[in-house]
Image (tube, rainbow, N blue to C red; front, side):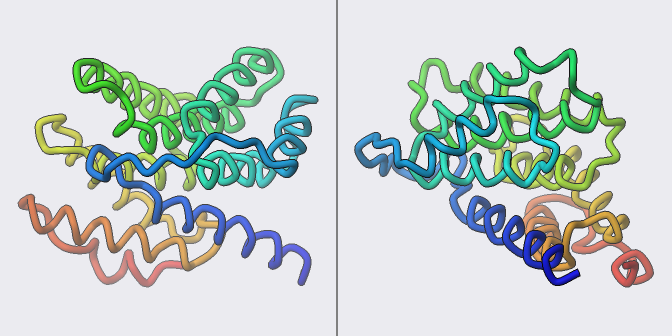
Amino acid sequence: MNSARWRIGLLLCVLLLIVVAVVILRSPDKRSAKRHSPELEYLKAVNSARPPKDPELMFILMGEFASSNLQDEGAEFFSARLKEFEPQLTPVQKSLYLGIIGLLRAQNTSRVRLLNRYGYVRDTITTLDQAKQVSGGQVFVVNWIAGIVHTELPGFFHERKAAHQELTWCAEHADKAPHSAWLREVYFHLGKLALNTRWPLLPSRSSRLRG
C-alpha cells in the first residue's frame, strides 16, 4: 500500500511540475542548450523496448523531456513509439500516448515560427481530440491534459467550451483521479474559464464532494 501511494505521489509531482511549465503561446522562449542527461537516455531506452505496462514510466519520461526543454524532441519520440507499438496498444494506452504528444506539442508552441503556429496548434488540438475519442472520453488523465491545454489557448481557437466540458468531467469523476490533489488544477482552470465565459465558476456542490 505504501509503495502504491509513493508511486502515485511521484507521478502526481511530475505532472504538476509539468503543468507549471505549460505556458502555451505566451511565454518567451527560455530554451537552454540541448543536452541529453543519462536519466533521459535511460528512460528513452526503457520506453523504446516495448509499451510500458506501468504508464508512470511514460509520464516520467515526458517530464524529463520537458525539464530538458526538449518538448519538440519528446513529441517526436512518443509519436514514433505510438506508430511502432500501435498494433499492441489498448485504446487506453493509445489515448495516453496521444495525450502526452499533445501536451508536449502544446508546451513547444512558442518555439514554432509565427507563420506556422496556427496550423501547429490546430494539429495539436486534433491530437488531443483523438486521445479522447480512442478511449471514449473516459480516461481522467487525458481529459485533464486536454482541459488544461484548451483553457490556455487564445479565444479565437474556440476551444473554451471543450475545456469546460473536459474539466467539468474531471470534477464529476474525481474518483477516477490518481490523487485528489489533481482536482486543484481542475478547479483553478475552471476559474480561469469563468473569468472569460458565461459558464459558472464550479460544478454543483454535490459533484465537487464526490470521491
